Amino acid sequence: MLRMELLWQGYEIDPLGFLIRRADTGETPTEFTQALILTYLVTADGTPPSGGWIAYRDLPDGMFYAQAFRGYAENRLVRELGEDGLTRFRRAAARLGGTAIEIGDAGYAFRLLPRASLAAVYWLGDEDFPSRASVLFEDTAPHYLSTDGLAVLGSQMVNTLLEKAG
Image (tube, rainbow, N blue to C red; front, side):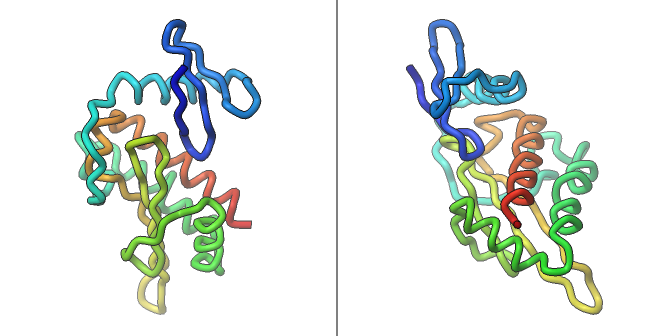
């Protein structure tokens, strides 16, 4: 039996039948979640985490989809956090056990898969520039998921941050 975490949730994988269950309830996760886990297991090549960060556009073929990703993930994060965005962002990151990184006005790294971390960064706006957010990927992440899979992972991270922002 293999055990791993994806997006703050534990899973158990039976390698003989490729059956996946939630570790806490034994329930079968959505097909979407199963696909992410199985893709990770097939793609993972053992490259050690580096701690270096890149934008979505810097992922393999990421430039093609970067504008869309910015809209449904990064811009959405700022828009839905609202006026008190920086405070709400910090609160959500703390609730999710984020590790502070020194980027932006607030930046946090999250290990979303055993060897793949993503980061969320918030820059507070002023009278000249609006607030903005970035989702960053550990530069070794393409060794664990495709660029499309990483887009899904980044979007799910944003969804969870917004849920926890309170």
